Length: 118
Image (cartoon, rainbow, N blue to C red):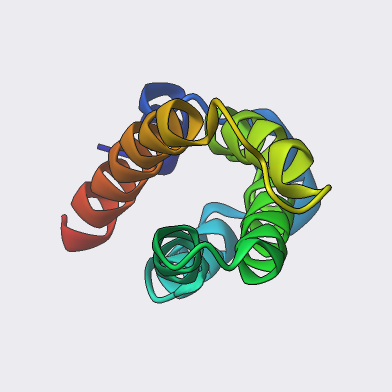
């Protein structure tokens, strides 16, 4: 799989990423850094502990990373989650939105891992 194919599979915007970063090599560099980012895990842990301020900060940071890398599907999910957490206690809907975000994150990370490992 090449970088463009990876972006297509994970619901990203390759053209925008290429325009922002200039080359596939630079895109790969930043995708490798994304592999090691811990914000998703901090988000899940904070939600489990009902620490919604920390959850909001992690979701907001993850949204920014996804936007900067043109990972559109993940950016859309984390945008929804960020807005839900913005006011503190999100109430109903958090569990299902976090589950959808988890599936999207896993799919994106799987594509990146496959691309990097090839």
